[in-house]
Length: 394
Ligand code: ADP
Ligand code: MG
Image (tube, rainbow, N blue to C red; front, side, top):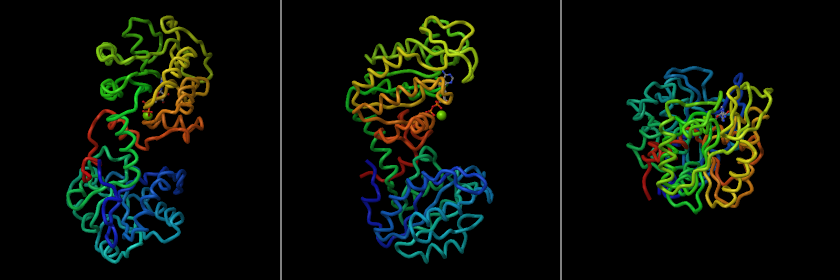
């Protein structure tokens, strides 16, 4: 277990907090501030416990140069509103300069300051000096609460830990608790559902999960590569040629390990990759040559829902069909519904799966929706995330 802000005395200290304020912007306005509101519990805790809070984040890809459209000023304004107090914005094209240092030095317990976009500096994404040292000069304790960038070793996500005590904020604590418990000590039966477009992207996750789960469900575009590996014709469906052999190996591994592998038994096909293309349901061994698989079929929805209903832990990554098209969203919706109705610990990892759950209105029925797309995938692959590995152990 990693130490959190509860395990360290922050009173009277200058605390550097890496947040994920990478919010979507349009015409200089924040279009969705969930990442800001999600950070509030950590920030409030630090204020209440008498810390002087110095916040850091990246936004967009300014590529190591100051670009006004990526300034964090709007985030400072929004934060001020939520916290009901001034958030001092340390405006600087180089993020840390003498003025910023003076402002940080003068910051009092209970006060909050936000630095400019750390990716204005080219060192940030390379985890290089002198930037890390400059950031370090501002504070005494490093708190990482940006799960979305925890799979990257950058100055502000990992480098700072070499300079000072490093602990997690509440967001990372939650991610580690749910993802970590599911992988290390799951309540069984443990069912994983994998979907999405390319098998290739997900092979490392599948391989790792195969050593942990009781049942592995495969849906989405990747199912067709498995069908092909089973010897079926898949028409115009997605085929990940390079992963064909690996798909066969996964099926064999599942059998050796006694993992139940559930593939769709039927599929919703269409002639074109379009919502307006007529939906044709067919069994998996009867996909017509001129059609492509767009979603799982009704028999598969039932099969998957049954497996989910008897699970105690479910991890879901990747939609079961092209859910962005309403005509081919049924399979993904059925899985989301089965999760919502289950008593199991339900964990959603992956950007599109999280968006699907949100879109279908089941978000508040899930135990945990991971906030980091890439980071949660790497976690599920069993990789060490540098932004978490660098934190102190309890
Ligand atoms: P996540 O972001 O949850 O990890 P992915 O990015 O791997 O998920 O996959 C999501 C994408 O997979 C979606 O855009 C969806 O349209 C696509 N997809 C799912 N099923 C199919 C299919 N049968 N054919 C083509 N694309 C599919
Ligand atoms: Mg995705």
